[in-house]
Figure (tube, helix red, strand yellow):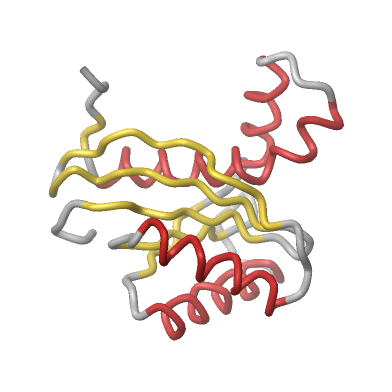
Length: 151
C-alpha cells in the first residue's frame, strides 16, 4: 500500500467495458470517500488508454487497482491472465504502483446494489462495471485501511 495520501483509481476490467471508481487515501491506515466514476465503453485499446490517461492526469492517483477474477476455488482462469496483462500495461504506461484485488462476485454484488436502488436492467447494464470497480476499491480499503465516515 502506498504510504502517502492521494487518489486511488480502481478498474473492473472487461473485454467490452472497463468500470472505474475513485477513492481517497488520507494517509497510511486511513481511507476517505470512494465512489463509482465512469465506464469506459470501448473495446479498442487506444481509446481505453486515452480515457485512462485523462483520468490519471486529472486525479493524479498514488495507486491503481485492478480487479483480478478467479474461479470460485481461487484458481485463475482465462480472464485472470487478461486482467494481469492489463495491470502490467498500466504499470508500464503510468509508472504507478498497481495492485491486483480479488474480484470474485463483484459484478453480482454490483448488480444487486443497483437493483436495490430501483434501477432498471438497462440502467444497471450501463452502471454495473463502475459499481463493481467501487466494490473492488472498497474491498481494498477494508483490507489496507480503516475507513472513517466523513464528518
